[in-house]
Figure 1 (cartoon, rainbow, N blue to C red):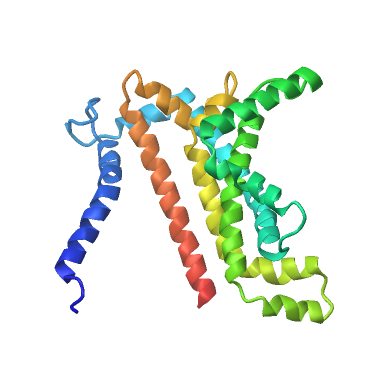
Figure 2: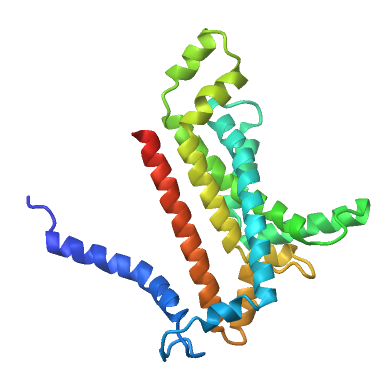
Length: 266
């Protein structure tokens, strides 16, 4: 039986890449367009980048989203790593089903339900304890950590289950404590999975609109919320410029991470 036609396979692959990346490339190209009309090219210009750096509202929203995304990715990776380790190594303990269900809930429930639940929780806390005083960066951060740690746990759990356990058992036989084994052996071996989980959490937090909409307060509008509100009145070209800067920054980070990983493997 003959394999698939090479030309057809390359064509399908090319169409897939075009479907994924042509819109992104178009956005980057039109960020240098001199025309205020997004779909009409009138010449090369950097005017929208200049306009972007004068738009304090958009820059403030972008900086807020970046801070929340970094804090969320860090906290979710720490919590999700421990949660995934428990799932992969601790076996079926008492209450395992409840633990697994609570951990997996953010993966399956709609973000609207998650946002409403957290909002009601903060309202009750404010009523009984007077804290937090208002919704803002902290409440958005809590919501994003709740959402992202479940994804981290899934990634880490899969990596730990595929890992050879003999190294951990040998270290335990030589007298190392379980905590020492985790930090000295397990953690370095799952480092690539942790990096992937961190980047996934960062992206999910940076991209979130629904949860942030419920948990934000006055003066705490994230970048996706700001862009979404502007779309209703007509998207301006400086948003293309901001998206281009984000794409370039993420691309540079991915290239650096790949170089470091390749150097480590060699």
